[in-house]
Length: 143
Length: 143
DNA sequence: TATCACGATACTTATGATGTTACGTGATTC
DNA sequence: GAATCACGTAACATCATAAGTATCGTGATA
Image (cartoon, each protein chain N blue to C red):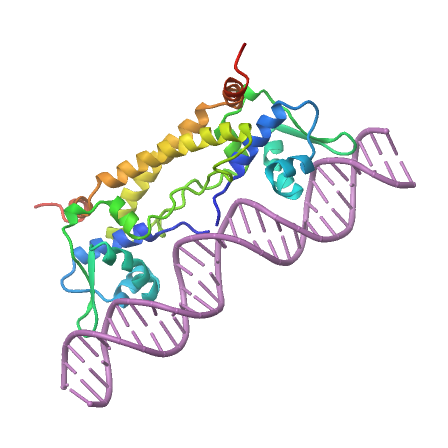
């Protein structure tokens, strides 16, 4: 399967929404992401459940940010979209009987756990507000 | 997709082979792993190409270790089986036009790169010989 | 009342590891 | 040299999961 791109997509959307007045429709977001409005609703449902965005029906409806960008980290977004598995590798029998397999699992899982802890720490250390500031610094240098 | 378990499986096999006199058949290995001999041959072909194991046909044939266990790291095995992707997440457009997306990608990829570097370092730091010693220490404590 | 936009369901597609069957080839045994 | 063993390879099926698509319902707005 292709890489899970829900985190990247949602960050992309959130930053655009932060720079956009009024709600954005699933259709507009889908065009922006090069996908389908249903995929947008499906993925953003997680963000809504977490309280990060709000959705309104009817004329003038759509999606809008519903939180302080400084209070949401990239890790929060990752978890809100389903907190999918991070790694593509692993072992088959986490609770193996075979003593050899146990040693192997301990070694591989240990390495994976360390890498995961680092990744979680990195994603947890950056807020949406900081990401937005990165964008401003890059694209709207102060006069 | 399920997690890629080729690394774990091959480590499991290699450690068993190290403690086994004479070659092991794909059939015996498959039973050990709870899989199919064809899967075993397919996966171990990479180890053979890397020179870590040898395969012989005919009576008394099978698979045997063909290298010094101290010279092969877990990372080497991972790469020998195809060096598959490590992460299940990523971004869709590595080379995005959108400036917002570029900032997002830089942040996510930066975190992934750091985690990958750590994982590679950990896997590269452990040799098969050390893994085998871990097993001995755990299961055959010195008198 | 017509239209807009989300909500939800159901189904399909894409991808990659894994599982399975079948057949070929070389090596060993008799 | 015939039978058997074990790997090599090809072809196809299975499984899991993100993503794409079509469709209908519901509430809100004009």
